[in-house]
Image (cartoon, rainbow, N blue to C red; front, side, top):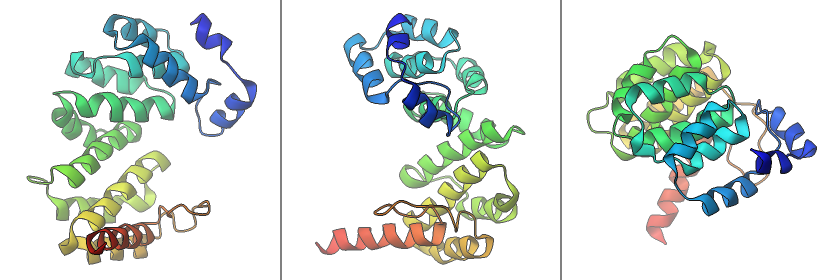
Length: 217
């Protein structure tokens, strides 16, 4: 904790706080500490219990993802205040845990939109890598009905799923693009030069173009 405190930088904190993350530690330096420490589950648990955002990010990097029980991960997700902690927990820990599918189903139906966003993130992973057994048309039905008025983090996760369905599944591509065009979610989202817009129709078109280019290269 003393080492993390020494790395605190006011400018980094100011940037992070604009995204809802209350810490000022450069993530590259945080990863360097994690590389030095290597996986240590007991230390990870103790760091998580501090409720400090930088410490929790480090905990995620040094934990053993498969060591957590289902209820532990559910509690941790609900405790994850900062968006970066939430995202890293889902992507670096839950996705590698044996309970990921059970949690995906439970979180997808949760009344808390932040928890539900984790369910959508896990669903997007399945859409891309293990779509068998998923009702993709049903997911599009939910997106079409609920995404427009969803809270920001849930909306972002649903939009990602919409785009991934359109990118990975040609038979549903036209419908996914049509939903994006009608709802116009993130249509005006500011996008840096060289980056792809998160607006689903643009995102889908660009990723499909890249896939086609790779096949003909």
